[in-house]
Length: 321
Image 1 (cartoon, rainbow, N blue to C red):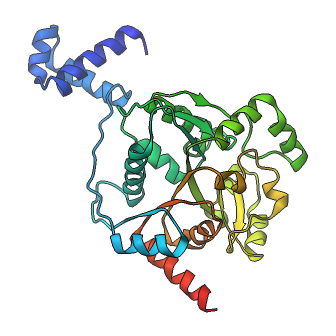
Image 2: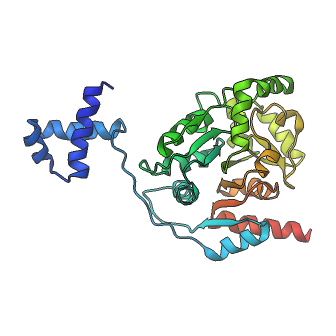
Image 3: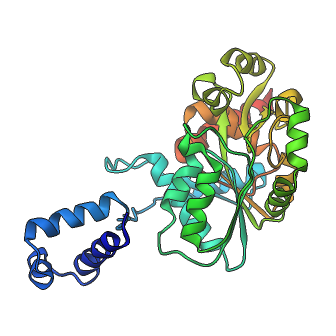
């Protein structure tokens, strides 16, 4: 966009949204037609010169939050009550809840490590555009193919750093290498090693939780693992992934032949970060969420009431068995 066009769009948008002038008044002051003002306002929204943020009320289930925290040794659990609101999805609401939590915890000079995920994407979208406290962002996992934009750690890191007013530390490597030897070479490269060290030293980690169901797996979508291979891993007890690391129902990281190919932080690395937060929901993710809770990585879980109940119920059944 040309600077002159951007300036005009910003001027018209500021007069309308900040100064609360009518479109007719703006047209008169700038010597434009009302139709032209309307089109400029629409263009400003379409091209993200204006970002409209609606902060929906979030109803939380305190009883379920206490149960989850006690059952899994969490510092905090945030459980969203089901909402009939047709204007926003439950995952978007969950993203807003995670974003508000982060905004409360992030302080100037802090470093936030992020990993890919659909829920991570929603949290980043929900961070308020004017929330700028100079927080640095470190990419904790290599990048997915560009065709999976909402799962691209580099793109998410860049967008988040812009909102937080901090620097971004990119991990210039793929999410997964061809084999373990190639991954080891990549992790030793100076720029990759420097970013991984930044991510390890982060104050907060923002994580997603993936499922081992092939139809919903980012591993399969990106072409790193075949659907047949993932089904075979699931048959041996693998239930999900976090930070690109597959794990089983007991929270153990496996299989090694896949995890060794990942260019990013390990679950052991994540355990050393003071506050690791995951955002996840959905019946299809219950086993994955339960396994993630058993890894010992998580300090905070953000989920919805249905998922929370199913996780607690499945954990109770496992305890009896």
